[in-house]
Image (cartoon, rainbow, N blue to C red; front, side):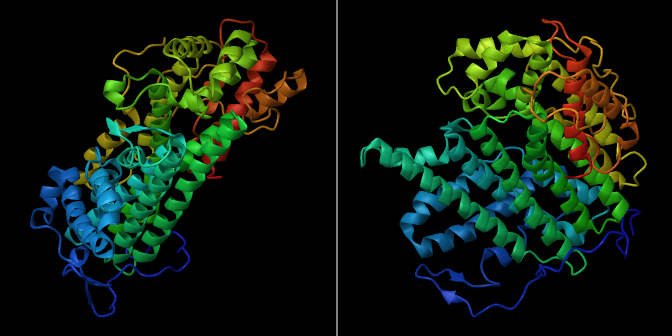
Length: 520
């Protein structure tokens, strides 16, 4: 037995959920096209493809192995869709299947796999890991298709977004307004279908009785967290609530948990990892996951579309309350930089923002120092995330691939040349030493409102903020680890800065960090 496996888990058992094991189903029913349906039947119940059933083969190319399982599962789902209705299958189900097959790096499935291997999972865990990895890809299809509808995005992965393709399929058959509503409705249904297929796949996957309740609980929580994070995103757009605390909370829910932490926890659960190992993986995943979202925020504004696969500035045009924007507003407010505040408030939510207008936004963002601070924090989060795994007895066949994957996940697709200077060492800027055990002063304080455009601080508020920010060194590494720390503390150099204003920005950031650190 591997060091990270244990017969008894040292964590509280979650509430009981239906066991993820095969159960007798009703008699198979004949479909008009000859396919059979019902529980326990169809390709989804068959053995894995022959070339996906060997550990070493999967280790050599995890995305390909997951892709083969997806091909098998989707063939079964499409047969059922055709049996239900040929038009529905051709218009909707086939597009969902094609979108899922065309997925990129299968990052979530890879995280699950290498977590499982690092926790000593062997041949008995191979089939459940690949099938749940395939389910994660379907869940990602749901998230992306719905996201494109909510953002009114017309392109995805270098081609038309799914809802836009459906709208264009019927171009000329109805007025533009009706066509737009049809496309949005069809996109919602397509995402729902992907979610249903993902849930079906998890429910049909044989998992041992010890792991099944935990796997089901993790899957359930992940779906809820994904929706919660997306709701915070759209609600923040509506209310123009550019709060650093809220932006980080949304990033934690919709990226850190869904994209990294939960896949790692699923792999650990399937491998039967002990409680200490699982907690270390989750803490590492949360740090890396937030770094992943911070990188995404930077790439939306500064990234090269040829490398990121999407156009620049969509977050600005949609008025999304990202951490980068919230931090820039907080710094500009603290520094009294009225030009930066004017440009940002004027541009956020402007769907018609021109390339020249976006360039002006980039200019004022750089002037606040926010991009450099975010860049620096990404490095610190990755270092801290990997430090959570120091001393954890991970299996050698999985440890190095997992650590490398975590690094690549956080770095994403950075710009070819960084378009902003590094942090310049203003008082309050976190040191850029990247030492995993070094932490900026962080803590929780009620001295500042959790909004980037809070009012001027009094001397008393500044003192309380500084005191609160200095109390948190002993919190570093606890739970999932802090997320932002004092990377907000150095305001723009283009305007005079009072110590009170700088302390307020520090307190805003520290409050956000504390909430994420303890899982709130």
